[in-house]
Length: 456
Image (tube, rainbow, N blue to C red; front, top):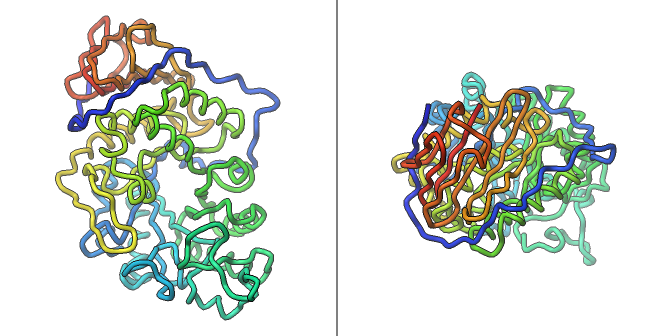
């Protein structure tokens, strides 16, 4: 059967992309990196949804998000990631409301967001609906007025013996912790354990995780796992942490590459090269988190239409079907077309949820199609070389045992036709595709910026 989805309103952007010459990933060898981290069974086909509590609603509360959980569940996402829920520092605050990442108290809830009882109710209902809940954790630094400052030796100090922001940053609203101090490390682990033990959360997204020593993360995660198995996401783009401690990290270079492709500054040859480098350096069992947007991308780099133009849907399909876990940032399902303010109130305009069905389809395919599962649970990624004459067409497949998925996308602004035999599919495959795209017994007839997914 076919499933048709609403297409993105056109915002023309010229691309010069060629899929030809892409290579099959190298075979695994004895030199392939390995990870000591065991993936959690429930995560194998999961997708993740990021929640910006302040901007999610006019109320800006945890309770307002809780009321919307049934709708989010309809999309099929499994993991809910809440940006920091803690009280925000007032000293040296940026903007009227401050940064979520300036933590004033690791064991409390921001009163603007609600109470601990509200959060407990949120977690309980999320669990009843089948979600896993992770919260953002800022281990590298605290607010200037965090009670921990009563212990100056818990912090790195400048030459004058004063607190200081993290080196090499403009983060003037926070101060750097000192991981040489064992008392501080113990207090941090105690705070991490608190939310797992008292509220039954399922893990953490760890801010600037690479700025914190790996041995701390190993110690902390081992302690957390004695309470319950936790899922850990590192805001980091290097292999070390996922080899030693974390289940997933950010595919930052991927995000940068697809933005450059959208601008016409790079081609999909660059993506192919990046994926080969990734395979050579990352254990196949670990997850990379792929995304078109998140709170940083949206607030600092642009909106989906602004970054990707007419090809927004194509890049979202790509991010959901290559070999990592896809992220949806709240509001994308409603065509979020503004950059949300970071230090002040700026609620999402939810409109008509025009992309709810689009994301539901992508998340559903991830959940139900073994070839698309995460890490070693899913199939290898293989780019398909398209014969000359189909400029701007990208094709690839993933296969795991009897499950196979072939994705073909037209990134150009011109109509394209691709014979089915060129991508190795026939009429026996189930198709999911953009509105008005035609698949006959012989070919795919693309309009500009359209996509099709074949599933077997």
